[in-house]
Image (tube, rainbow, N blue to C red; front, side, top):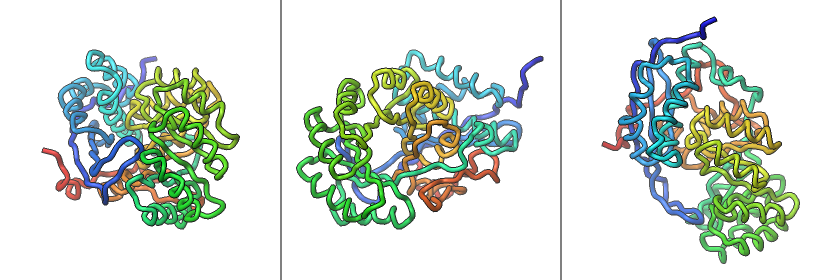
Length: 368
């Protein structure tokens, strides 16, 4: 029997939008004042699909100049074949970084298109088995004053989100005061996560792991560089019980995640739908977690990630990141709002992921 086929992909459009932050932001190793959104729209059979990534404008150029021609004319139902063709096409460009983020944006658009052509929500197309996705409020930037930090964390708790995360490591000497301000703001019953973005040495990270463990912190993200698998494993072995070590947000392919898991480097693996190859790549990362008996947590971009998370067997949670939450509310219709208990519930009443892009609202941010 011949495989089912769908209409050919007729067009691939891409644009980049740079949105200023609401105030200067920084973490342990970076500072920024704007975030760039790269949006991909595909069409086939009278339907459209929408995908995006958070990346440099060069990502849009790569989609336009390299990937659009690879995808156009292909069977809109054959998402895996299109993904494989894109990966093959960027062989000489290098898989990590911009190339994988470009593939991610196109892949999420193609999956959205496929679900819309089938007339089903994306959670059905992805064969999801979770009805809701736990989230944690994320931000707590090192550039924030103690009052601003406390207000943001408290706001998530008041919104019913029982897990919150703050950035640490830029000025370790200040992190004790920031830790106390965070604990005072969230009160008992709320989990506190910290993220050093690889800013600490192994010795510094070990010392902070002890301190965070004593304070009841339950998640220490990238205490050392995510490329330092031995250091992550050291932290995982030496950290107090109850303090999980997490990393993986900079993973761009299955080989990266396989190495991290084989090294026993993390208690929970992070993967970013907008970086790791889209829904197709995220499913690969989730399958590796299943094989190793390790939970997966989705990094950022909550609106584009929720449906994929619902289809991950060993799902821990999804990062509800301040910058991306703000942009997604500004520029998209159909965004999901947190429900009681701090969860997102993918919309099963609309085909695809249910998002639509507000072009008119985004026009003032377009990069020309």
